[in-house]
Image (cartoon, rainbow, N blue to C red):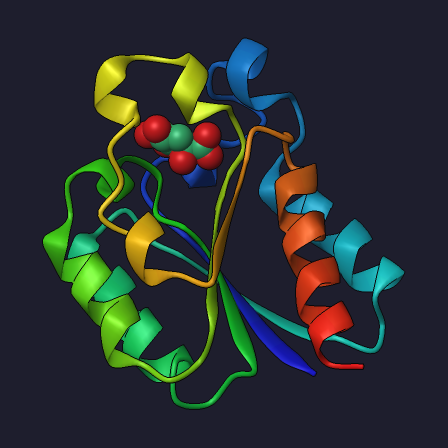
Length: 141
Ligand code: DQA
């Protein structure tokens, strides 16, 4: 099975950025663990701080991968374009967030993505990504 993880702005700083909210592990090191735990999954990874690059990545993965795990980070709450890209592609998308966005500021309760994805996993730390992988694997049995 082929999955792509797409991370949005500031997630390149995981491990250094507000560790009390996002933890102290960098994403590359987490991804290494994840890949070793699920060798049957070919996991590609893309991160960008630029909205248009995220849209292009969704368009590309969305016609070639079995699923996309998307953390659009701050763009979740602002980007009609990312929501439209998710709508435009046939691959199923799971929206994930590290923190529980519903327990945070009001502006983080709004998502332009939630209504157009297969499902949403919020608030389990980096484990949110693993839960999304498990969901895709169980669908694929
Ligand atoms: C986030 C939550 C967003 O509100 C925030 O802007 C992020 C990360 C999360 O994974 O918890 O950058 O998507």
